[in-house]
Length: 489
Image (cartoon, rainbow, N blue to C red; front, side, top):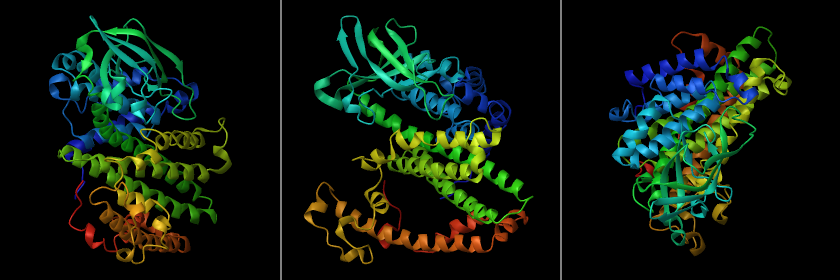
């Protein structure tokens, strides 16, 4: 499958890079230090059409595909993760929910101003007592003669104190659990709606995150999004697309860390030291991990644009990109040693420190890596979860002979149709990955023994980048026969 960018996608990528160099990079450190939300910059993004890129033209958008929208999020996050999160949550969650499920009248009322950046959207799902467990919502929506009465508190809401349009998930039939959740649009000036305390965070300090309090907020019947008690299914659809945006956001953070690390190592070459050898091989592994996440991201976006099921692909992209970014940003901090330990250091060490703090967030929300792997439907495929587990799973000594593994009743429980075959395929995949890991380790060892290889690959015109050669070695092992021919989503 070819994931080469189209001419239009390249123009969007170049435009957002130019914007980031001019409008974001010079000020990102100050925004983070002062915890200042860059409202004017967000408005300029909207004026240039980046906030409504994926919306239909009839409501002020450009009708771009999922990959183009991901390129915008990635491009902004490369310079500032806080602003990238603002773009992802505004365009992908709030505007996306209204676009997909609201009535035509609501779409015409809200989406043009959201696309232009005149209004900011906030998507309100999380509560103090329920994060990934949407069935535990305590916010209630009670119907009366004049519409709906909303009462409750939302927590960790992006744009919670600066938003103008709030998409609120509330329970309209508590006895039905998750099947009794509905979605509403609530405007900022509605009586009873107010923002609570602003959340102080370790990273993403320039992103506005706050409580949203609904104290007997009355909304007319027309503010219900879609059908009553269909909010949970709507939220799942929105979160599926949101994982593509978050994967792109993570990749942008990681790419920024990689580019800064390469610049730092090139500067250090003026004073050669033995430490450079380890840095060069680490750079190659950073590039390899980030590229693996990018491929999964492009695949998920391709499936979405093709109208095919993409939840599993989006989940894998989010998981791999978030973990690769955490690995890359921590290595970037280690490169700069003690210079990155204090907040009063020059801009470059602070940038590495800031990216490492920002990279913690996607590991623990939307959703966390652990809850993503435990999703019963549409999350990580079972064979991928098996690969991530230790070799002692199922009580065996390892997958040396997958077809000979005995799967007992206890292991079959809850697998459903085809689950046992997925177990065997998972064991075969785990064996293949183990072999590939050995090849990859040997390649990195050769780099450590011969560090000039990286320099030659970078300096020789037309040379294949060394990280591409490393990724190429991962394809030397065959894919298990059961997995050939393409797997269904």
